[in-house]
Image 1 (cartoon, rainbow, N blue to C red):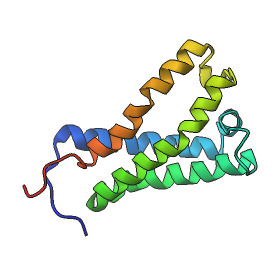
Image 2: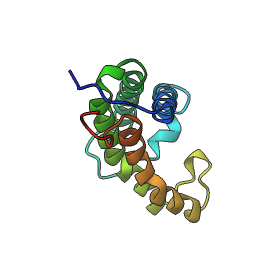
Image 3: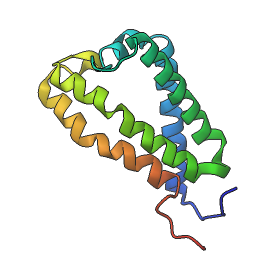
Length: 137
């Protein structure tokens, strides 16, 4: 069990928002966005692209639900989400180097901008889950 820490209203709102986004995206991986996500699986991944999309969708769904319903373990879930976002970075990079227009990212400049914004996806769960909060409050 994690120690009690004070979380701001903004942190809670952004944690819930991220949880909802991950649930939505996870469902998309498993259904209506499955084909779009196939283009983000780098060719060097030694697994079937469809399997990678399905597995990553399940992980996104689980992380999203954990952000929403396991607030008691929010710092652990925050770390798991941050690590997940680090792990999916190669897919975003592959989309850039392969000039793939999936998800409406139809120019290299837009895809490159997303690469530079990707660190925010790593910081978001860490901040919203209180990883940076001072201990002992």
